[in-house]
Image (cartoon, rainbow, N blue to C red; front, top):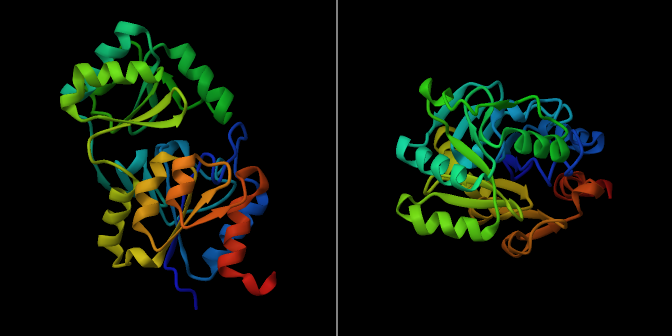
Length: 269
């Protein structure tokens, strides 16, 4: 019987290689094998739920999803269990600043990403990096938030511009978490993947030490510090590799499959 109740997996750079449209078959197959042992699968990603569908996951069917870096907790079927949204002040500060300098800015809403500033540049980025731009919509009329507020944002801007935002709006506490140099997930103060997973622990009764996680970037570090066992992909950032308790092969070497093989099926090695 396995000591883990769940595995918690990042998407980009962990399950799915940058520039590839989906998780590779060997990775999806190994995740499914672990799931058949009775271990639950949790996706913890900066993506929204609609941007991590089963085709992107290579057929992986998660039991739970922590999306937008912890801002939303959902069942694998998409039932919303918990969510937090930007305040109007937080959202308008982002729009004002990004518009001032023409930096691309997208907000995460319940149905799609809506790009409020520099739509074509943002859409081109998503198409080039993920192979998917169908959920990146033109929101430059800036009306989507009149239906409901966004729960996350994504911005493209140089590091010096992030410092400029914090000089002007630092009192809001918004967090710019690098996805890649110059590309940032933007979260409310105190929001991260570990917060989302803690909400899940409260619902399931699992203990942190009963979780195994895998990630590759700064937004995975709070989760790595929470769980009992953590892997960083070999392609991960220096900070993420330092935070993890073990290193898995790179995503391009199907590292998730290799790490799960070691943890759950070592007798086959």
